[in-house]
Amino acid sequence: MKKLKFLAIFFLITFQTNLIAEVPYYIDFKYILNQSDAGKNAQQTLKSRLDNGIKKIQSKEKNIQEEEKKIIAQKKIISAEEYKKKVDELRNKVSNLQKERNDLLNNVAKQRTKARNELLKSLNPIIKEYMIEKKIRMVIDKKNLIIADDDLDITKDVISTLNKKLKTIKFN
Image 1 (cartoon, helix red, strand yellow):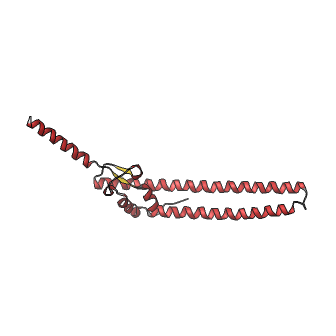
Image 2 (cartoon, helix red, strand yellow):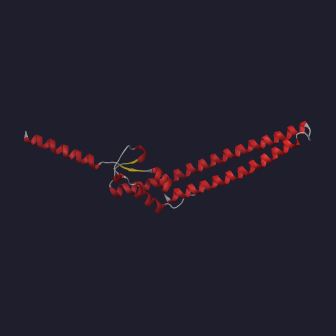
Image 3 (spheres, helix red, strand yellow):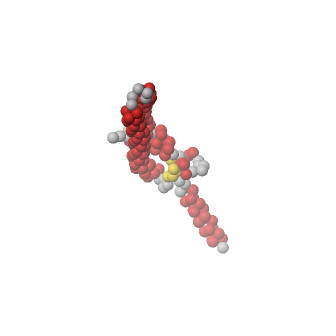
């Protein structure tokens, strides 16, 4: 009977030790995307492209508004047909400007997604290498956690390795 109790306790302790050893580590992908050198560089590049595009669109908007004022001022001077023709041209310009704005936003969104995917693609081998080196069996994203010990966070170790291996993300 004592041997049976001893075996039961031995198996419970062994089983609990295995459970403790199998604690998953976590990583904050959002932090890596925003704070890594390549991530910051990509964000700055995309922001400047967006800002430059918006400045060009705003300049065109001002030109269209000035043209609209001129057409309104000429309403009584020119014929109804000529007025209608100029208003239609102005509407076409406004429509093209809206299309240009949407294209700009869609293009930047696509580039942002592409940059994010490239960064994550470069990150996967780094995480695998880190897992092998530290004998970690599972890594999960921090956003899926409710609460965890800070000692289980491997984000800073992974980000330092990523910064060494990937300096920038190339855009077309």
